[in-house]
Image (tube, rainbow, N blue to C red; front, side, top):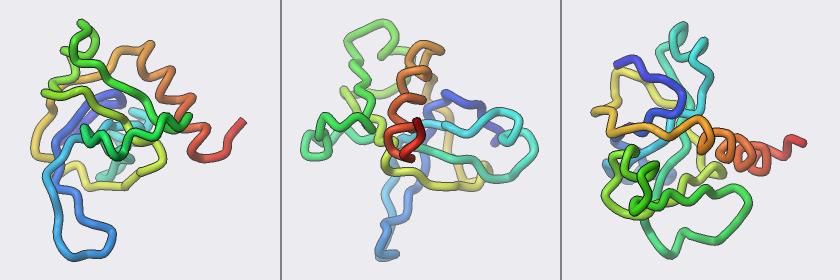
Length: 119
């Protein structure tokens, strides 16, 4: 499945210790030029777990009570974890849930810069 930057997708994410996996949402952060040319895309994981919400500059809050939040397709307030990135094959993406607005993606870009140490 071809995806676009700002799509929120559902994926089967493998645990870092390789003991299993969990179906969870993620945000496509890779540029569309590469999404069209490559079989893989770069994703930022999304969590609704309150324990993962640290308030770090690497995290973007999605409030589903807002119009923008409702366009994401998420069922719970969630955090885009820009400090938790993965490269994933497009063909393994289960489906597209929704998307983030351009203004939200600009804020995600700030979070990505903080995660990657880019000024």
